[in-house]
Image 1: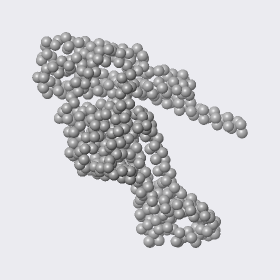
Image 2: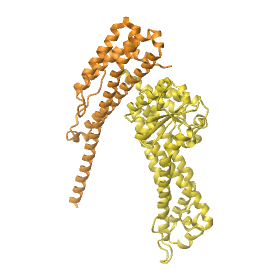
Image 3: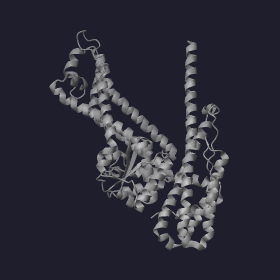
Image 4: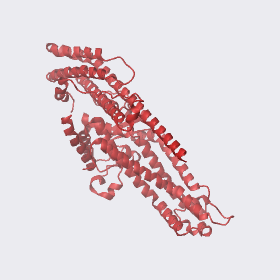
Length: 349
Length: 200
C-alpha cells in the first residue's frame, strides 16, 4: 500500500496521473487529425504541379470542429438531461427530518469545501446511489437516491456528499463531457467516412484514410516520393484510426477511474473521516441491484457504477479496464489506509 | 546575443515574480474569506441558542446552572466576536475567538449530556429537531474551522518556502494564526459531543 500515502499525497498522485492520461488523450486525437494532414502533405509534396497538393490541414480542423460542436451540445444540454432522465425532484423546502438532515449535510459539506451550496435533488429509486452534475461551481447539483437516504447513517451520507462535492471542486463534469465528445467525434467520423467512401465523396476520401485504406485509390497515383518511413507512418495512422474508438474509450475510462479515486480522497479531506466513506461504499456495494433510473451517460458522476456490474471485484484486470469506477474493494482499501494513517497523527497532534 | 539572453532571463524572472506575488495575494484573500465563513457559522450558532434554551427551559428548571452557563458563554462569545476588519485576522483575534467559542462548546456539550438524561424531553419533536440543527451548526463551525486552518497552512507554507519567500515581503505576507483548541474543557468534551449525534 505504498501508493496510498496520506490523503494530500494521494490527491497529488491522482492529479498527476490523470493529467498525463488527458495529455496522452489529446496527443492521440491530434495524431488522428493533424497527423493525417502531415502524412498527406509529405505524400503530395513531390507530386507534379498540376496534381493535388495537401497544404491546408482539413482533417485535423474538421475533426476538431466536429468534436467542439459535440462538446458544446453535450455541455449545454447535458446536466439538465441527466437530472430529467432520472426523474429527480428538487428539494427546495425540506419537510421531513430526513430531508432536513440531507439539506444540513449538504450545507456542511459546502462549508467544508468552501464551494457555494449546490441544488439538492432526490431520485425516487430504492438503490443507494448519488451523482453530481452541473456546469461549474456556481450552478452545480447533487442528486441522491431515496435508497441512499434510507440506508446510510448521518456520517456516511456526509462522506458520500463530500465525494460528490469533490467531483464539483475538480470540475470533473466538464472534463468527462469533453473527453466523451472527443471519443464521440472520432467514432462518428470513423463510421461516417467508411460509409461515404462507397459514394466516392472526396471529403470522405480525405478523412477516411482510415477505414477503407486510401492506398487503393488516389494516394498511390500521387505518392511515390514518400519513402519507407512515410509508408510506415501511413500504415500506423490507418491502424490508429481503426483502433481509435476503442483506444480512446479506454483512455477516457482510465481518466474516469482516476477521478473517482481523487473524489474519494477529497471526501476524506472534507470530512476527515475516510472510514465513513469506506463503510458507505461497503453498504452501497452490497445493495447490488442496479440503479435503474440513472442511465449510462451519467454513470461517471455517480458514487458507484449505476449498472451495478460486479466486474468490479470478480473478473480481474481486463474487465476492470472497462469500468467507469475502480473496483470497490480497492477504493475501500485505500480509504482505510488513509484512516489508519490519520490515527497516529491525531493522537500526536 | 548576450544582451538578448540577459533580456529573456529578466523577462522570465519578471513573469515569475508576478505569478508568485499574485498567488500569495490570492491565498491571503482566501484565508480572510475562510475566516469570514467561520464568523457566519458562529453567528448562526449564537442565534440558535436562545431558541434552544426556550425549548428546554420548562422541562429542566432544576438544571438552571447548566442553562445559565450556556447563556453566559454565549453572551461572552458575542462580545468577543470582532467587527469585520479587512485583511487576515490578527493572532490575538483568533485566540480570543477560539477561547470564547471553546467555552461555549463546552457548556453546550454539558447541556446535551443533561438532555440525554431526560428521555421524555428528548422524545418531543421540537428537541429532536433542534438537536439536528445544533449538530449541523456545530459541524459547520468545525468544517469552517478546518477550511480556515487548511487554507492558512497553505498560505503559511507558501510564504515560507524558497523561492516564494523572497516575494513574501513585497506581498506583505505574514503567517496566519491557526485556530487551535486552547480550552481544556473543549478537549474533554469530545466524548459528550459524539453522544449528541443522532446516529441512527
